[in-house]
Image 1: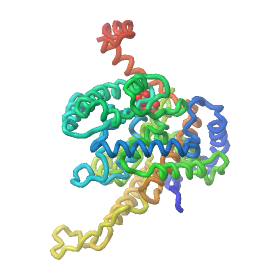
Image 2 (image 1 turned 60 degrees about the vertical axis):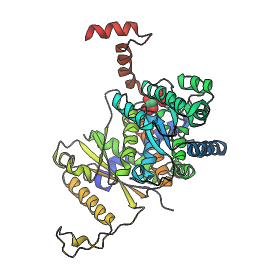
Image 3 (image 1 turned 90 degrees about the vertical axis):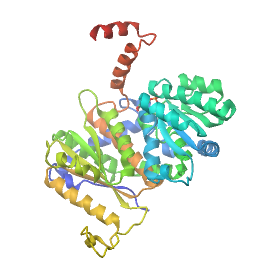
Image 4 (image 1 turned 30 degrees about the vertical axis):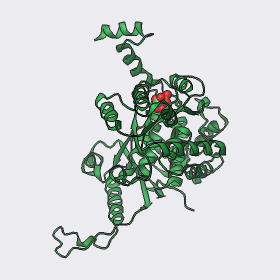
Length: 447
Ligand code: PA5
């Protein structure tokens, strides 16, 4: 069976292979620091061997709970933000029929999202949509106190209980949270909800392979065992003892750090399949929150091609030369569609007749790569054999492992996010949250 693969050939006109391979010893040190737990943030390394250590009991419990939710709900709302929702959404959207929501026949509950914004319009329209639906909620929050998620859950819990009665609500509301602390835990225990624990030593953005990601993915009807199998494979392929030149996580981490050193401050993750949009969002969070600190860090951006070739394409081709691209290429599409011949050929597209649509897409991909490299944009290429649970599991673990190494190469703690607190403090002060009296006074004086 194939694995996802990494190709850095198209960066080599910009940085040298020697410079990349010179990272070998430093990467080894970083990788060992992760393995031995001797580096910064070493209390958050639970993700490192999560795939290979997940228990059969937990998997069975997740699948059984997913079955109950699927049987009792036509709509399931995932309430969570950041690491507490992006991984699940990334997998579900990558694997779902793009038009599932609009199709009459459904193969499982409709999955929708809340708790990742505080928009009154969004929440009103959501609760309005749910009014005549048999819906359930998966409330995901490690701290259990995140305002966006807690506010959405307050609304959804009440609505679910009012519409479906407390007894059914109990079957249809599940909490994924800390073992002991936080409001989500207190509420779940008091109401008797089924709960799953987020391990203490796994941070939000590294938690997709805990119940945070696995429960919603299983509820959506996807194979979580295959997802984990893919991640286990990458645990092996990117392992601490795998030599640099055979280790994709090591090479990716080294290449992006060398590009950064050469002045390429922005990494643009590229896809040619709209289903991957949220996988890009997940990646942006993983790298942005892990590396952007101490006035350092590559800015992670993302584009959906060919859509964005008609907007951001101009900037990428000819704007400031501070960028490089990492393209995620799907080798084999899951569906088959041939361009039909047309006798009149009014659109002039008969030169494509008989070809698969994917062949056209692949030529757009290749043409773009050549154009962008010619325009001064180094190109890293990741090939994913097919879009399925197994290869998404590989991709996620590969990115997580590379992120840990890359953060250490940069000299930061990739596992904290102190910067996220600043806006919260101000918001609480502005809203006069009890306990923020001093901050309230100080911020009011600045307005
Ligand atoms: O990666 C992270 O730690 C964050 O993005 C969190 O996942 C996010 O802030 C949500 O936090 P919580 O799960 O505590 O509600």
